[in-house]
Image (cartoon, rainbow, N blue to C red; front, side, top):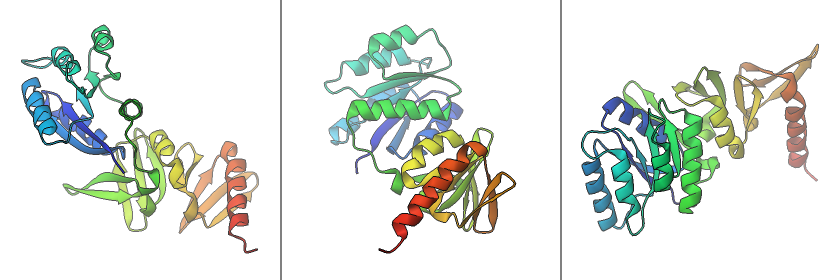
Length: 249
């Protein structure tokens, strides 16, 4: 299915790398192009149109050398089929400009992954682009300087570590810079359920649910994961429903 093609524009390389990484981690994004200034962004956009593969959205810094983001945003709004614009800036005072340009969203640095996810959702809805199902979601992880893509099908459970999440698979674990709450929302359709403030579990990998003295745990492989009291009934009911569906007539 179709995914979004986006362009990230920022004249500061660390900021550009950060936003690019977060964009690539979202399954709704199919391709991320980058530019270090407004002129390079315009050239890239023109080339994409000429090739018949226009950019759906531009994630645009405001204070840049040369052609700044506000001016570039106004130029983009005059395109015959303008890309959606999401401003990404450290400054709040340009919100009025963003409103006048009819930007899809206005994100403040440092960008929180959950806010970026919401901006991408708005872009997808506005662009009317059918998005790939979470059941086939993959997420990029860095391992020894190499980027690998881990499928949700291979993830057994996820553990929160501050603003990061650790994905546990049968062969190891991977730390990604995405909050657990974001993965919970994104992967619910792929069969993941929140069982604790610090844990997200793939229901298909749950082998046992055990309650003792009011405390509940689930076993996935050789690991026991605590289930908070507020999630116990929901999880138990879900497992019972799944067991009934799998029971032969």
